[in-house]
Image 1: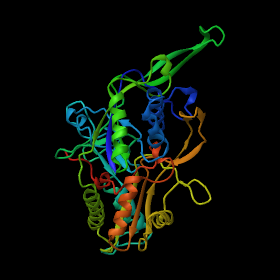
Image 2 (image 1 turned 180 degrees about the horizontal axis):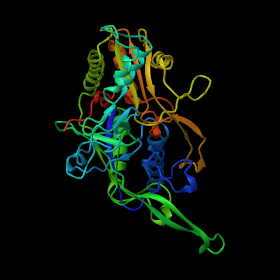
Image 3 (image 1 turned 90 degrees about the vertical axis):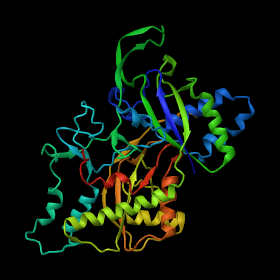
Image 4 (image 1 turned 45 degrees about the vertical axis):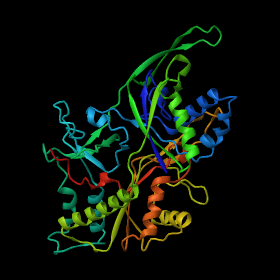
Length: 435
């Protein structure tokens, strides 16, 4: 797959209404892939209505060959992190914790940021669950029946101010490519914009109708990654279109476009990471190693050949079974079925160890057809599922998991759904960030 980094800059107030928002005031925290795809498709039809380029419309927007992304906030306090245009912006996993009194990442240490750092609790919760259920034992006989609680007690307080650690609210972050590879939280600049109602008969302001709408402010940045198959002709057609509209401000997104809202500019850049599979394999190895090292710290007897890996959702996932029932989790049976059906790969003694997930209801509007979408249910982005196998993965399984990460899971992947990261590097952050 070709990876195209997309950077969006807001030129006029951008309103993306959140599903089921009370009185229509609340907005989405990001630009959904459905809005991005719909905006591009509408603009393409306007530009090339009677031109030869219109022959490529079906391939670009309807065939689901190109996977368009959700666009996440990409405004950072540090200029160095801000300028890393091909570095991913990812949602924080559900297992993230930070200091209750001083929330957020430690970086940047510029005197304005008072965050005491974040950590990930996936490995600790998994070890606690295994010890509590008696599936792994302590190397020494427990001194009390509650010794397994020490796994959670050890990191329950902030190491800086000794205040309690708490669940971190959903957000987005970028890991710098420059040593020591600090992580930085994305900022969101938004405001409430007041509108008046219009009388349908007179076309003038109607009395007693005044409402607010949350909008992204001018200068706000977003980031996403378009995945394009290894088809040179398809890649050239897409990049030519995006380059043409990029800096001209022709693209409009969200609601209120007839009032001058939603004007954005975009820029694209091809990813410079050459050997993605090597980095992928190293990431899986590092998480499994960290899991075993953490078990040793708590003096737990973990089989040396047991292999642990995780699936972390970087976008909502619409998944259903053979009877079209929506799934609210990914367990061992579901994952085994996916690997067997799509890749003809079996995992020896695959077990689901721990999960942290939630479900959301999806509605929306089909921009290209001008019709409302059917309501669906999706597993929310940031959800995490930890699995184990009885032995180290062979090449077939590694290739299958890599393909799963590259192509995604579930329905509507061309609209930004189903982005999955296998053994996300963030889960190795078992301690709060160092100074």
